[in-house]
Length: 359
Image (tube, rainbow, N blue to C red):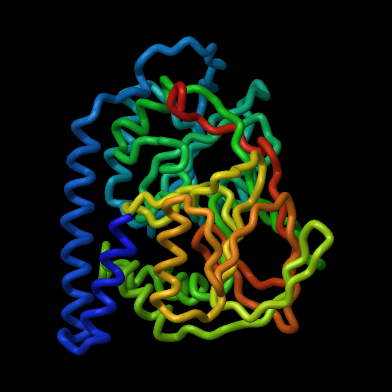
């Protein structure tokens, strides 16, 4: 509730001419840094519920693991701490490979005795989504060490964000089946996404946010700088959305197809819907509406208020086709991944993930 209010106040300061844009950006960055630090401090003081015995039966976890790492993840400097935590909890890492060599993963999924290995994704949403694509429909469980900047998929599953607690979960949690999104395009193998597929503003955002050189210089401010860049470069695109036997031709600023409900990284925002259905993709289609109207729509969505706002459409679908007159850049789980048109659909229970008990 507070985020749209703060954004509205920030916009009004510039609009009324009482502050420069630089003042607002600096103030927002300082506030975000203080909020993130306070949130982390509170989280570290909480009881680690992943080790509390529950009533649910827990499937035995594999004895060997494959560790997939991302050297450019937002918190990759904590990888050494994560490795020590894995050793402490007696999780044997038989193989380790960087995300750039993920094509080798299929040959590492089995032990010498043909038993499935645990696959651990140490990185952000992009790393998790890439690994999840290789595990869709497989019997290998996925473990997550959230070392990215946003970690929205991990937040959606209540997975701890500190390496120590996340590693503890891998030895004490339980396996749950989780939905994935799947994208099918002509002449291209299907691609899976764990968190979200986006077209429009988020693609411009990802162009800057995924650059290793920018992350190295700006650190936690990378997302803020990328957001300012995306808004400045904002352009509309034409597309046709086809679902449930109907078609809508729209001029949009942003199109999001969301599989995991938490968005906004450390802000921990959730798209709420009073008629939430299982095994659906949340679709948010945003036209080029004025910023106050966008803030109003965001406030309604985040509060679960079922009230339409002109220029913003929210849907829940099993599958949806997105047709465009020309190819449009696409982002899957925050990483640039070719273009559309294509068809998006939910794959129910496609991924086995280690989560806290009673999560």
